[in-house]
Image (cartoon, rainbow, N blue to C red):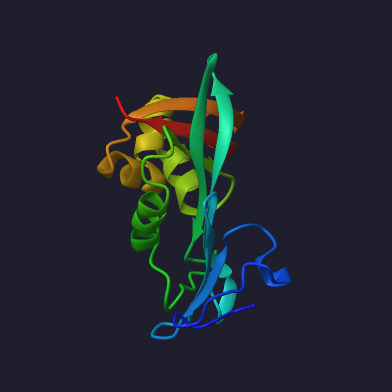
Length: 172
């Protein structure tokens, strides 16, 4: 159910079944947004392949329990087509603001597109995987927000030709 920004969901209705979700259509730019305490989701109604999605996940890394922000932002397709309403940097900042103070790290998982290409280029040029992660778009956004320490969670494939990379970014 989509409602305008001046309408509110009835908290007892079936459409509000997963807690305090707020579904909203921003009329000025036609972006569909769904948010609650533990997730953020935005999509371009003209092409739902363009989206920004984030969740808070509880994880353990090197024996430390933490809340990790896992995000996926896609504003460009392989054919070069771009969303006319979603901007990656803007969505990254909105996601961080939505979850402010509730996470200790940001997780990036890359199996296609620009982040994976940038990571592989950096590794092929001699960078260590942690350094290469900071050369990706996600790494640059995370670093700009103060998350500059990288832990590589997994690498699939060969150096310089990885098929999937999972990295976590922490504050130093």
